[in-house]
Length: 81
Image (cartoon, rainbow, N blue to C red; front, side, top):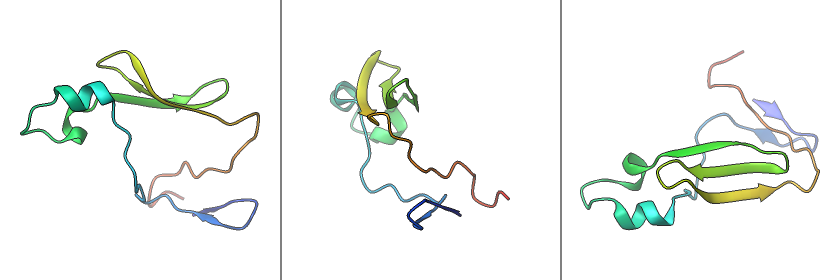
């Protein structure tokens, strides 16, 4: 596990408590599919921060502006050295 500058441990295990979904995908998916199964999202860094993009609809889901700040991150897979 990686530690941030403030000494907090940044885990590399799944800890998601709120999921991001495209509003249009949620309206279009069939009842027998979960939002996770239907999603076609890309997530990546931009010049200003981090963006979640819906590939299916070619639209923004979320774009976070880091306001020029660098943030600690753990980018290692579980079990990686």
